[in-house]
Image 1 (cartoon, rainbow, N blue to C red):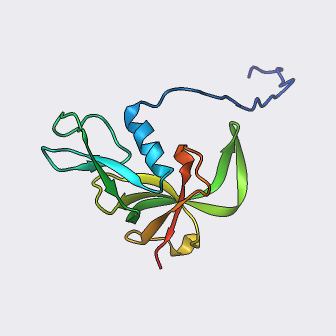
Image 2: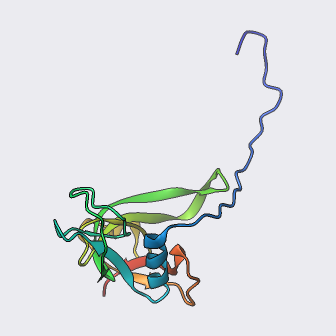
Length: 153
């Protein structure tokens, strides 16, 4: 600001957008399987890597992935972070209880799946912790049918 100028108004505009788009045949099949409490992945027939969520092309071999396999529902936390805020319509809000966001390597998968971890104090989360998928009841045929992960046992 220049000398003598002052702020007259300060506005915060919340963001509230609804998007409708086709996810494609790979993610559509993945979502339908989540509604059946299954986690589906695709396997590369050249290098053997297994990708979840599924993708059409193997980034290593450049091969079209058309072999479907079921993975999980258990896996291991590989990396994680603790969240103390959330976004609500574009605005940052503090949350009462910290949340755990992790990248989980599901049993049988080569790639990592981003997920929320519930049922665990943030101080107890660690790399290598075994977790299992918890599915929404009843399913809604959406990505949110895989609700969260929680510790095994």
